[in-house]
Image (cartoon, rainbow, N blue to C red; front, side, top):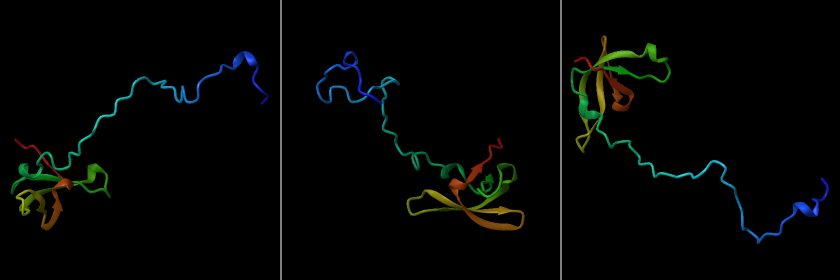
Length: 103
């Protein structure tokens, strides 16, 4: 590239224009973490029918199970439940199951 012609050069103070915002104003919101803000464990009781999410299977192959027992922690928030699917009894975290609305 050759040098620019003098008609295309305008003197400006250093750092007068550092960036151009082509997209318009951009507002950054402070996002709150919502991990335990809503209590998912309160909706799950013994006898509730749930879908057991498994990341190794496609969603149409996820299993149905019934809650056999709930295990609340020291703060009385249920994070782990015991499930029964067929003759198999196993434990899963509450975040890996989805209760079905049967009513």
